[in-house]
Amino acid sequence: MDILNLIDEIEDIVEAGTSVLFTNKVMVDKEELLEIVQEIRIKLPDEIKQAAWIKDERQRILAEAQKDADTMLNEAEYKLEELVDQQEIIKKANARAEEIITKAKSNAKEIRIGAMEYADSLLLETQENLKEAIQLLNDNRKELRGME
Image (cartoon, rainbow, N blue to C red; front, side):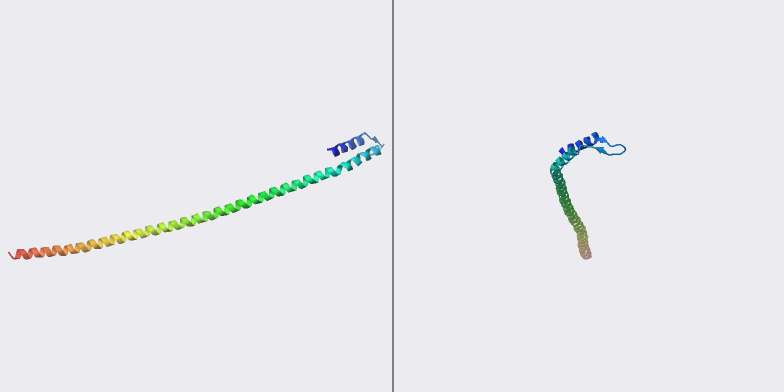
């Protein structure tokens, strides 16, 4: 950088200057220093513009990065909400499925019990009819034997 070189030249001039006795002061060539200061003024605006541009560019990049980060965060939150909603739907579907299975098992048990009770009542009725038929057969046989 030219400005840094010019500042180095000023330091060299000050270091090479003649010391004033009993003080911290130095005698230097006024014209030489003013010439360097003038060059610094001429070159300084470009350097400052570059520094300002770099600063603005840095701010723009940081703002863009923050915007991208916010966008990614929002997308992640949205997807998380979708997943939570899907999980909730899955939980409700599973609960409903369990409820249906439980009800189906209960209905099947009731149907089995009802079928068994119905079969038992048919068998009992058949048994009673058979008892009556056997009794009637026994009575008929006795009657036949009594006719002999």
